[in-house]
Image (cartoon, rainbow, N blue to C red; front, side, top):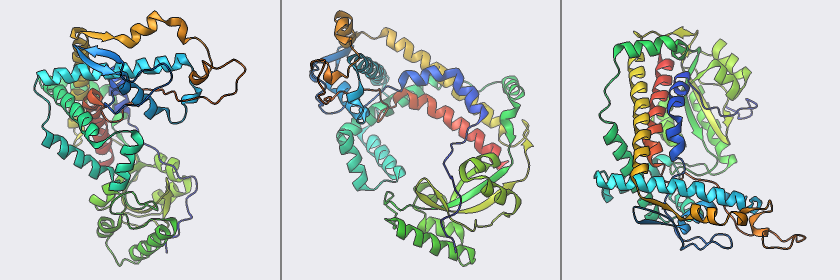
Length: 425
């Protein structure tokens, strides 16, 4: 039997690697400079005094309307708009507009370099992301409605993102692999990043009480508990193959597709995520191939876990360890791509004819931004308790991470490769 009481204090923890920190630190400015990009959207009336049809900025003559800025602010405010002062609102609008300007500059470059994808490519990518998201069609539609975005607007945003990604790939294609001396220097300066830590690789069958993935068959806590017990009994009784059961019943698209294969946890990560008792059991009692005899609650889901492969002690990896040299090569190339992308974007911005009317308006009317009261209350008498009206804030990167995807995803891939190689060896 697999009851789901079990490990107390379980919480998710994203693993980190030293190599990722080292490489991303060098080029973090590029990532930060593009996280404000956002898709265009439908009209959204902003706080008093904001005309959604007003032109916020132009890039080589192409207009960016205030409705785009306001929609993003509204989308990101999440009920906190009443707490913002006029000064905070102005700062938030300028930050979002800066991202939209950068996006437009790079998209125009992509058009000039003929890296804009076809409609068929965009539709294919959108369908791929829908599938990988694991959400049902109903939830997909609800997310679009909640964000105030139509599927056509989402496709336009995705087209811009893909165009800019292709542009970045094109301009960074000239980067050559690092020399052996560079690879060796990096390894010698960061040997701790290549230590394979004591821990274990797990496979998982995920039971989700909420119906999110199209393959979900459990829709509430009772059904999930019953399914976990049923599958656990079959696996512990050696009446079923774990990978086969995972492909049929795991209510998570990734583990379902991989026959349950999940991830590696160091002993420390196990203790932090599932508790010290769990880590002690796995490292000191469990054997390779064992099913954990209790289901594990994690982030509202129920996990049935299998110990695939344990690493009993820390192991130093050298440049001769399979995969290490390749991992460093990829990481160095990716970091250089990010730096080149950052430089390219800076030059593109300097060459574009940009008119930021919103910023100019702030300069011309600085005294209208004073006051610590929420924006909706700025026109009310000082002694009023009237509830604040709508005002919106914060920058966004919802649909079109544009150049950030082209740079940061590469470094993430290198980091994940780094982690995976360390774990598998």
